[in-house]
Image (cartoon, rainbow, N blue to C red; front, side, top):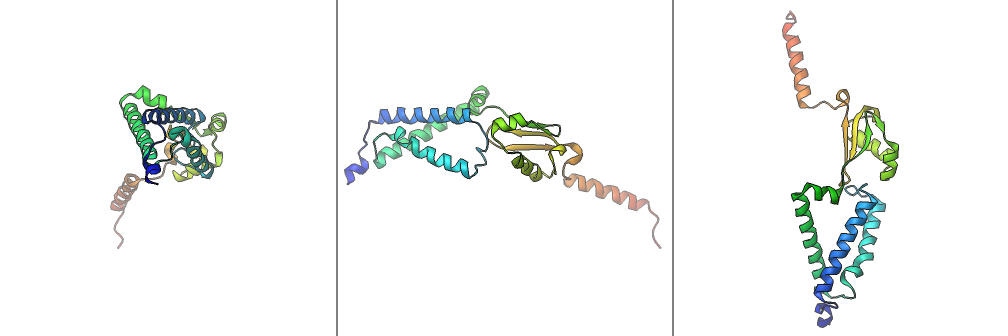
Length: 186
């Protein structure tokens, strides 16, 4: 039993190459498929990710079912990811290659329906994002952008933005100035 748990079924060199190749292939496939919801997985996306990990498992570790082999494959995967993330942080061109660029989904209060359809996003999901920012409808937005990581950024038009503490303080100061000018009630 102990022998089977710790004896690797394939060489560590082969396991390293397999892991790096599968990792890079998945990066390319996920980049080509799109960025919709990577940061906000819905149920369908979660199921796909879970199945995807199961599908590529044997491509990574081969016919090796040992504990050591699995841990080695995990280590190679984490090191490959660490290296790519550091390089992406160092070189902007490499980061754009890996992650892509932001995609404009709405501009000046109007949806770009072709881009939305191409990204596989539902308009009701964008409507929810607008409401989360304090808006009521797309007409109140100046820009909606899908970031490379899957995050939706909503910028409301100047007059439709939610008041912040500075706005409230300015209103209070103006009211205090008006109150100071009024004759004292007597």
